Length: 150
Length: 150
Length: 150
Length: 150
Image (cartoon, rainbow over all chains, first blue to last red; front, side, top):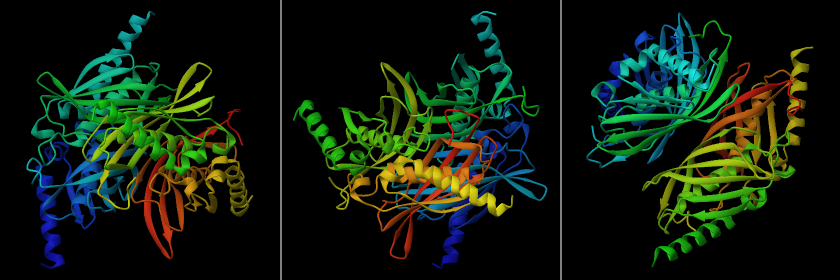
């Protein structure tokens, strides 16, 4: 199997897993670019995902940032392995307002059991981008568990 | 004004603010007990808020945990002040499955500008409770901003 | 072996490990109470552990808070297992000044591989205590590694 | 005043503040490059700063990572302002062993009151570098406080 075919298989697997995340559909989130170690997820601000001031709720920002970090991690793991978030911290740097909110997850350090991944979340308005949040997460690889499989 | 009337006014304000959080309605979250320094928010697991294994998505757990911590903070602040989350960290301790997911926010240390609040999230199944997540957040009091008011 | 003897063996092991932490001696930290799931470490403020304003440096506070969380975790693990901190977050709530700084670590949720532990750090001045920091950590149990053993 | 003179004044102020951090001298830490928004602090592993397995203690790694993030923040603030860490999270990615441990702090987003800064800590062994820790901190600018001045 060439690298190319593996990458395609890996991308397919991530897209299939994303499609099973009910919350992503509920939030209206879409999966963007999927590359080895890097995954993007997008959200369009709307009242259904707002907090009390009309900004996108920190929970919705966290949801796409966490999923982007998780799939960035999954993209580097063997196909018989899945991923759970053990913890994340998110700094909410500016109100999440704009045309689109884009979460860009990337692996900082891949490990056999634990992987550290980071997501920068930007608000895109017209042609400009503004950093709105920074998430750092510890992801855990799960093998051989019947209750956790895809 | 007595303490009793103040508490009522404060609780009303929190319930009105919660009603404006579009994301809470979208997730099906409900506001439970509101007391000085303590606020509960509940969620019923369902496919619309799931991750790929069927558990409640970390983003949905984070959303109610963050809001519970934020409203616990708001309950101790003057009525002309609102609250923004500047950062939180959440440890996801066990899969969020059960009859109900309950986030119990409480203030650890109230400050003029910054307040530290903590939320324990439990899964309730039958009569038993299990800790599923622990969030610690830094909340910032916002005064005199026309773009942030309720 | 009774519970009592196990506890004694466990406490001895923690005291021996603490004695090997060169940094604790360098900071002048001392190990206080050691109980199943709870460990205390103390520090006396002095210029050698200060930051630029004369308070105890956040790094020194973090060091005893992290060790207290780690030993609280170790107190619940089998004797052939050791512990490494994978991550912690610390909220620095008030300046660390006083007669003594006491870090009280306790296990929030023990797990086979990962344990969540929390440390409350208080400043003791005369008879009163003030919360100065709150740490939440993920600890990892390490088995069967020749390079990590006690 | 030109940019050049300001930078020199700012660097001098950071070097003077670092010299007042008793803990840095106690750990044997030295201040490296100081640039606008970026500051490096170094440490040489030795028994006096170790944990029980002989690695550099997470507390010592955190101390230089926190100070590097704090001084990176201070480098962008007016001269009448000082900085306190309100919180940080650190992921400990690999054991801190090597010839030198270097903490590279940089500002992610500067704000009037709160600044987000990040520090990558690497272990340098021979000519190679390895990432050992990642810290993200919220720094608070302090103005007009008699008890906090330099």
